[in-house]
Image 1 (tube, one colour):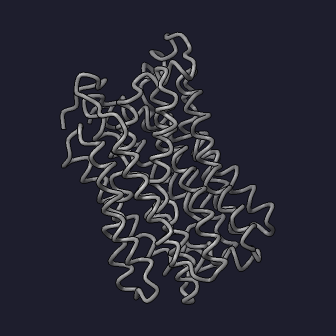
Image 2: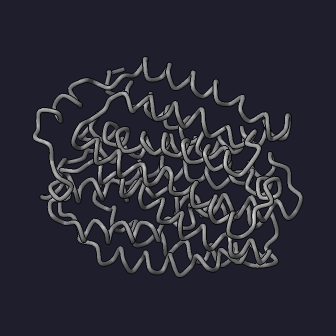
Length: 395
């Protein structure tokens, strides 16, 4: 195995752990609402912190990455996230809960821009495939995280969640030592003069902002899904492990979609995915928002939802890298961080509102306008010709 592939595999495995840490709170939203007596406003605040901590950290670290790469972020960030996120379990008040989400989110957010650029440049002739594999790792982490978290909490209680911190931290340190990326990836960047943000975006700041808006709307259902599943099933007195298993149906399907993106679809169709997939998600939201939707049908609908809504998200990242080839870190931060935060902010308001009304399933119908706007916005984005792509990709 070449060194590049070993690095990519270790980055992918690290991504599994990072995102498993990020979603430890997934099956617990209903229980946390009860334990901390969260009102509509305090729930909105906690959901917002959870959405924004990681997402706002990404553009900051993405900007730093494109000016002064910090190789150690590949292990320091994941370590912070892995240690702090499991602390939401034993948190004994709202301040401690919010602080754990804030610091854990910053650690998780710092990892993604650097790691995404490294994953895309390790094997540049297969950029979309490499990014899809890297993001597949994240989807697998998100899929496994609720099961692991749910099993721990169901067996030993909410306060026992801290046991995941040393386990995840040890694995992160091992993977970093075993799969360090080549130093030349960082030395080459350091030899270039520091770029301004405008230079990284080649002067297309307004286009970058528009891309952020489109991707934010596109990602609302992704950000809302685990919360809505948790609140809907909590009303049915489901256990943490049952909620985690249901969430994992959606996220394992997302993983399968990313594998299909990696091995079945060639570069050049990114914009088509950004237009078509939100449209395919609309009828799925209609069924999920049906008041009488039985659990078996909800489970069934989560499979295509994961495939088309989350599984195709690498297309957004690859599109942004090709649109802004001089600012890979910032481009990653827009589509892997800021947009997820934007989508998270929108869903936080939608979710907290319908949870307060005790009809969380109706939030799925409120998501439909977001998908319509995301489709219309994607149609207005510029196409990227083969002449303008930074790398010719062989799949």
